[in-house]
Length: 337
Image (cartoon, rainbow, N blue to C red; front, side, top):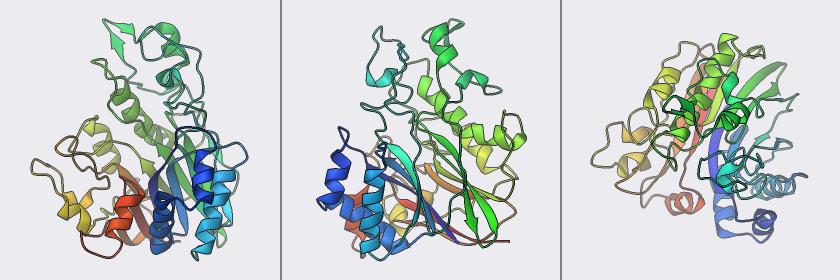
């Protein structure tokens, strides 16, 4: 069974614009469809994809994929926190009702949300998206001079998820595989309080707390795959690297270390990590290419293959991959018990 995570960069400046682009065969949309149809995952976690209440954009993308020969009859897209008004000054600039004051950054509700497409039936999804950051055991919420940043009221009401956290049960051949899906915030666009760095780290560590049984919900009852974007490279770039290293070293998970030729070809001179593992093609020299997208199976599952879909320059699909997104699709094959 092939599971994939892909930040498609399919977010637009206003509601309905993504749907229009899909229906108009926009070049970026077409490139995303070609990438997915080349890899042909059984289940794919999409990120950077605008949410709408009726799911029109997701259905249109599924139709485009069907035309390309890849069928995903089962779909899920819950409302994310992006663009949802909080009514508070969450970034401490003295103003409210701006994009950074929403529960997750976004200029409209659902901008840059998430979705899951599957060849197999999807069961009852558990959504943790409204979980408050303050309620996470060991929360690293920022403070300035010992006071909650930017205010006690904001700290009391801020949600942990900048986009969403989901447990998506996929029913496969008589068993259930749990897709633990999230999209963490980028550890930049803040100040010395490191609001986004702290939030992104705790968004990732949420999953370890869930597996520990330390949250109000039971751990997944069955094998799982952790999938999404932490926006944290374990070595390079901004972000709290220790949080990602903690996840990668957790004995309940396994890291297949998917690689690509394109990552090697795009290596940055000052890079500390292995460029073959990179999943994001970002500006040079800063932040440079990074490993920020992950598919991490349950340690009890047998991994039979993995990769980052990033052809080297000059190879077939290299230009298509670059047109599609700054991120690269990550895939892992697992043998089900």
